[in-house]
Length: 132
Image (cartoon, rainbow, N blue to C red; front, top):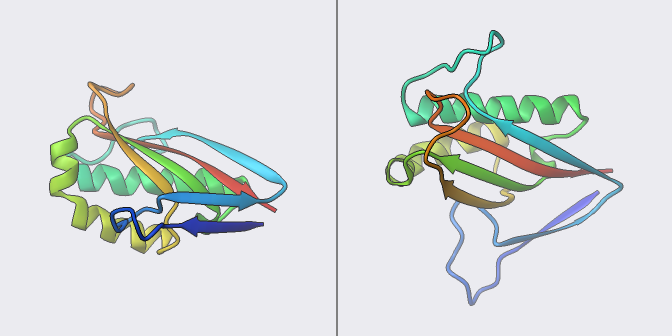
């Protein structure tokens, strides 16, 4: 499997994401949206950074059980109930990402959502990975 991150010089320099990712591999893994649910199905954390950390860990757990690693992520979409809050916490969220997933950034988007499935959820992440 090979992922190649593409960041053209004529685009704004990416911070915490790649503008495009090309992938060669034999298996796609589609990762369902993950929020800050614990094993009992309860939302944990009251702040965006707390919930982001749990949601990302949940996404990476699903990926690991499918046979992948964070470096296999080609695309991640973040759904946030408060985009301004997400932007305000971006440095901390970036630190959490690097601690859990490293610096091989997938193509990413942050989308504002009025609310998520669980009313207490502030953030949800889904993604696509490419495996050998």
